[in-house]
Image (cartoon, rainbow, N blue to C red; front, side, top):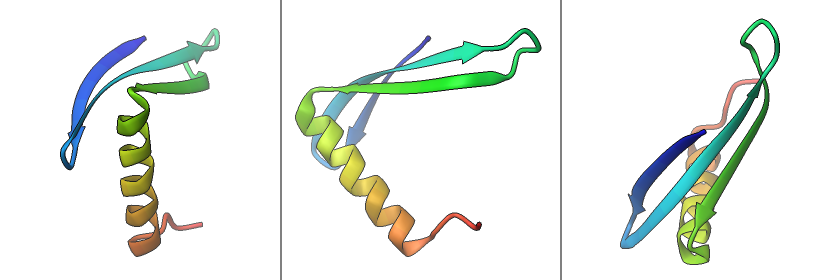
Length: 58
């Protein structure tokens, strides 16, 4: 698990990344939890805007 703190605009947030690894050390599951809800909404909005302006290549 990785614990982090961040700021998105005027919203402060705390988060946790939970990684599950297989026997070779590769990530098989990746879960992100963010609190509070206002921080999650700010992060999701900023991520969506970033993906619209600079999409990930297929």
